[in-house]
Figure 1 (cartoon, each protein chain N blue to C red):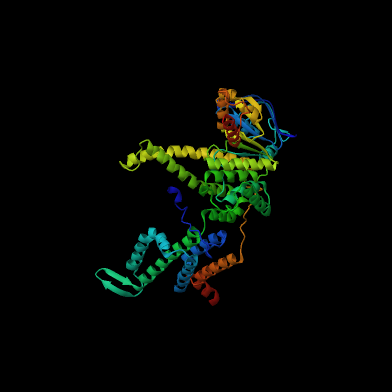
Figure 2 (tube, chains in turn orange, purple):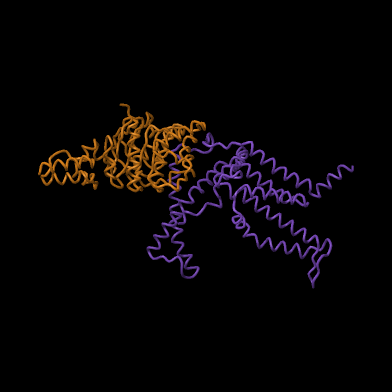
Length: 290
Length: 278
């Protein structure tokens, strides 16, 4: 599988205006295959957002000291780059931020979604097609003329996702994109991410501290104190409940429940990650008891 | 809720006036402003008054709304009318009582001034504020001023700043509401006390609001860069403004009103006479 992002021996420290360095990431070696879905977990200050911002080139050498290399789409973005190359990478790696309000530029939904393609200089008919398609992809068709501030948080965030999708990126990074949403909004975004993943052409990286959101990913990376603490499938990661607790992370509630049951000697199967699996396992358990 | 307040004074609708291209509306407004100032003969005032009335009728804006627009200038209107009537000393004397003398020209000037102001307010508010959304106005202005970009005036940047400001008004209002609620919950009193005390308690709203506005700006800039923004050059538009035939008709009609006002102006008539007599 082709790797869309390759990170080798990466160390990064933020630099303040007086030149002091604050280490944020160390010894990161990671690669992301095309079309994969990875969740990056970590406690506040673990460096997960910093990593995303480096990949997306929001953070550059101007913001701190970078050692090691990051290759995105075959180009080494940590080295010397022309402005046009940097622009090209930024257009192909999309990013959805935390606060939907800070990502919406225009006063109507359709014009906001069109903002990216307009910047790329596409012609109006093509932009119209992209707007219709991306709004359908996030389930917001029919809201073309709505004013963004009249929409709910989850709807606004879906518009933000559509705005990024309209750039037709090869990779989308969701940087805590559900943190400010209510449960319905969160579900809608997770569903959108899931559908994007099923389409298979976009690489997805989600950064979150909600454990439930990591269970659908192909791969989970846990960061702690600026380093990679764990890296594996959701099943592998979430079975190590104690290790996760040691870096102040939780496991999904249903997993926690079965972990406790296991500790008490009432259960000895695999720890379920999804609520429906948990319900099934619980039903089986009760049937055996009876 | 604060956020339900309408932006500007725009009334959404689909009247013939609403549908005029915003660029045309801006030009028409300029034309009408010029026309009201050059008008001087009875005929031109009549035409101006009728065309303003037609614009108003077609816009389907209620008369009450229009009166509201007049409210701030009622005082000036009365004041100037009063001056014209009582201090003009030309024409025939038609009324005299104690020191008050009213001449025919006073009455005529007063009526003209009255029509002038009424027409000015009606056309500008009907054409611009009531029937054109702020964003359409911004876009129209950007399109009209585009030639200036060639000599290095950053028209696109101004237009973008304007439209982002418009876009963030509801967001910041919502935030003001939240901050006020939070400060109230901590015992800030916004409604009692001396003016100074109230102003000071509002400071507890403005400082966090300013901080949050700056945060919004930084994050928005990041998001815009992530979406490929690098200035106005090479940018296309989803919705291009298209001039319709009716837009041209509107412009020609307004231009005709202006032409009439110019021709009927005594100064012009003098010039014409001068030319022909020679």
